[in-house]
Length: 238
Length: 206
Image 1: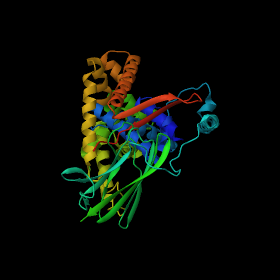
Image 2 (image 1 turned 45 degrees about the vertical axis):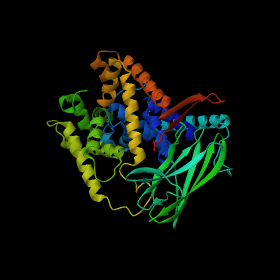
Image 3 (image 1 turned 135 degrees about the horizontal axis):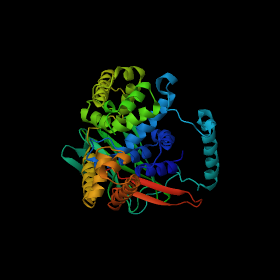
Image 4 (image 1 turned 60 degrees about the horizontal axis):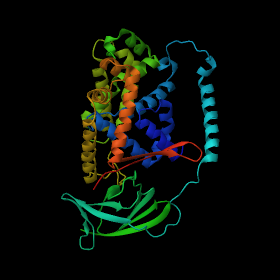
């Protein structure tokens, strides 16, 4: 499943209209795509807040578990949970799982062929990037018990603090990859969901700064259809 | 939906392992079990959805179905399974050996604090704009975890009306979050005619 299709299904889930079958189709993509997983989590957070707060099991989560449970129950042996209520069907052959699976796969194949023909060429941020666009700034903050302070040569971070990266841009980032290199340490992380609103916005989680020395954060991103790379260096003291 | 112990027909179907009955049982008790697991606040991190699923899978197993005789509260029966599940998981969990930015996170980061406060403010603002009927629908559906059919009966309106009202409320809620910059919903049409929807959610504020 491509990312766009997954986002479309997540929108349907946010509207409470995603069937268990489609939830299952979405499942593998949710496991592998950090951005979609983050979108899903955010919808769940919103729904839980509507219910009264984070202590509530959100409707979207209930629907997802129902889909997974339905699938798990199907896999149980007949004497466990296979005895369905009796009911006559006009098309008994369609009740056979193999036939249903075959039809579903044929339909999916047809849809894949059709969408392949109409899908616009994908934009990748793996392309070589140029300079950062006008108005774009990558900012580093040292986060400690007293709050967050902008990192600078005059205000280096300390090993007891965490590093939080944020960006300011005239338009939202479309895609991003973030890499942090420190003394004896290199990490590549997913920045998670990218805020669509402009202004100061965080990029991914904050990092522990275990070792003193110089840390370099490299952001490779797509902004208004153009790829670019930008770096920020942070000094860390014990 | 009546409790399982008060519904002889559903109880018999549950005990026999009728798959449709099991899903009905899940729909009736899913919210209660999820809320209960969240209320336990386990010391180690756990996946809520996995825990809810596993609780029901255990409750739907042959031995659990044979054990439940319909005399006690089924909700308490489920809560006992859920609690035991969590205790088992915590006993089995070994200290993590792999360090990653995610696993090193403190329980609540500064941006998470700000994000939660912002969401709370926005949702409160949205609920203040609703009529009493709209608030009742949200309360039954989201807070109490009632189905649309149950909500319709409890509020004395048709099921279709509940469905339509809920969809409108969801659209308005996400539009409200979009307008305030918290959540951005954008829909359009591709050249090929397929509807595309882009969702991007603000991860939080510093």
